[in-house]
Image (cartoon, rainbow, N blue to C red):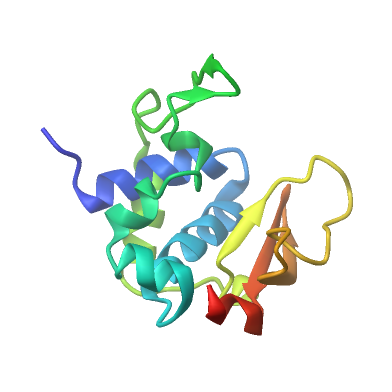
Length: 147
């Protein structure tokens, strides 16, 4: 049986940010929903406003990859069922809520160091917005519109 959009989002929130507290999980959920809603650029063109397309877009989320770095990935959305908090945050995001400090961010990543690079991805389509927990969040630059 296929997972519902809510279930997929809750699983992705747990896998990508389960250890980041409520704020970190809401920030990640905000990015995912921003990708669903963005009216231009790669995510609009490729994902067409569909949350499943966002979640399963190749190369976007390590948690949707069964092989990572040539090794089986033990931390996937299929191996880690969500808890109530993950469903609550998924419902919050699906209802149209957005964490204000991540604004319109389309990307996040953990740099595993204290500082966030100013641009991410490295093609400079995103500029640093805020750090929440271990993750750096990036808003689209004007260059993103050309993707």
